[in-house]
Length: 422
Image 1: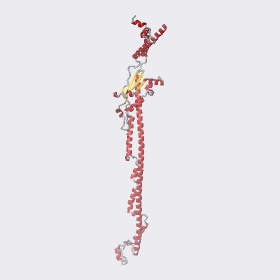
Image 2 (image 1 turned 60 degrees about the vertical axis):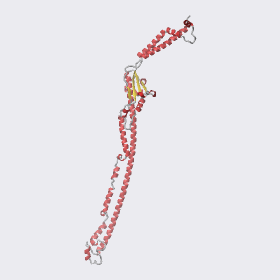
Image 3 (image 1 turned 180 degrees about the horizontal axis):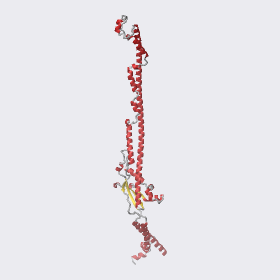
Image 4 (image 1 turned 180 degrees about the vertical axis):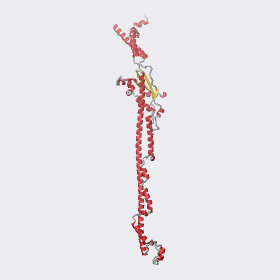
């Protein structure tokens, strides 16, 4: 008896698996394995050839060029950063809210016009895939630190491309609008604060003008009072002079009457003819007007006594009145009262006016600015080949799955037969 026969005759130990017997069992059940593999492969083939085709459109996004962003900036008032803008793009690419926002697009709505709102949302949610890079996927040396991939998987290539392009157009408009509204809001707030500061400075300038007007008016009033005092003094002096002249003329009149001088007489001639020449020294006496005669002196006395206004006889009064009239209208005060432009007289207002002009220019720049919110790293194009179903992979998986399932069924059948044989 040889060794092989010895092995065959030795019964297997309980709990051990006889591989040779197992192989013999599989050989005996080869038909089961074959038909199982055939059936599973057939099902996989049917699915591969009859399952709906799916087309994929991909787009790759990167932060926009800072040089192009700078074209929308204005001086130091409005500055835009490409990375900040791109972060807003990533926020807009929220896969939860994106389908609902897409359905507001008229073209997308037409695509799903025969479906309910929930069906539309479910289809778009399944169709859209957003891949945002994480820290573990950063590739700075390759320039892909912020590379974001947008994928759309749909039944027709045209509609897949339409959805992808609608996503890009929507986030472009949404981010631009958000950035512009934010900047415009901030600029308008700065303009409001600028106007408040301007109003404050204008009121401050007005208060300074009112104070200056009061100072000038006070100075003019002081001058007026001084001039009026001078006028009063010269008038009092003129009145005193009039009274003095009356007294003097009355004395001269009495003397002329005693001397019987009625008409003006030359003093020297009167001395020679007068019988009183020995008793009155007409030449060496105090100067007097008696020699004008009683007629003249009486007329002059009457004139002085009847005078009620000395103004025409005061030489200084004309100049004083002119000075007083000049003070009635102060051109500087009138200019201050009518001043409406305070910018030329205030450094603060000039600075605020310049800043306001800059803010208005910046506001107009932002309102009309056109700038990119991302850079296309991968342009979405209409696919020509379906990515699903993957026929070769499905057939390969079907064969392997059929083989595994066939072996499993064969082993079960073999085990059942062995138990029945016992």
